[in-house]
Image (tube, rainbow, N blue to C red; front, side, top):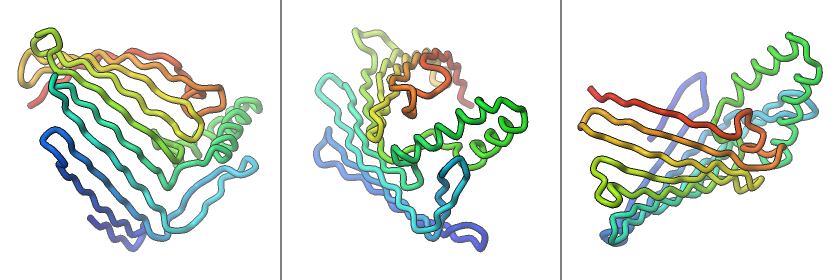
Length: 204
């Protein structure tokens, strides 16, 4: 894959997948952005570093004899923060709350929404998901549990997905999540440490 623009960095990507056995698959993705801007917070100020950015993902998918699927992936985010850079970013957010003025909060909000909107703000993550369709012969029910573990600061998200599909184009999902980590870590600093979502999906 490739993306060329006179206004934005040129980007290139490749992905591959290979079945090593009937029940074991490996996959990988690689993305490169040429001469791209990477944004960080230094001493309370937004700074940009220009250079080539590399993202990549390596993963496996395993299916056992009980029809349990295990997916494990390592993801490196080239645009992401190191641990020290995230500490600076976290301090930048807290400082606007300390100042407490509307203008300071709006300015900080504008920076975060423009430059730091990714759900993965740091560099290195491990993703593991285990799913089991129709356990105990419960028809149309598929439970799964997964985690996103931040390898840079040891915080993580732990979540379950309980899906029920009584018809081909209709699905109900109950999705409880817990975020674990110290206060100055990525997942530990989130506003909500626990949440429960109920989804209804209708396909046309």
